[in-house]
Amino acid sequence: MEEKNESISLEERETAMRRKLYGNNIQATCEYCQHGRRSSDNKAVLCPKKGVMPLYHHCRKFVYDPLKRIPFRQPGLKEYTREDFKID
Image: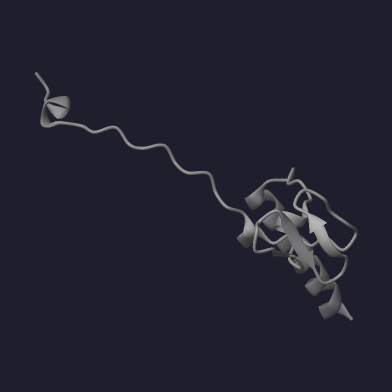
């Protein structure tokens, strides 16, 4: 019995760490759901639980999949020259 209690607390800790890693205020949308797959026209999500759903809708079966998030593109780096690093 003690092993079950330890494993539950370990799972809770992992869940808490995961929330902190990706932020606590993630919007629940079909676009990021583990069950859904994007349609070929990228305007809807094909859900095995609910059928064809809009991208920004969600249901009770929502399970967040962090690998479906597409990160924003980083701004380009400024070009530096040798003179920028000289100390006079």
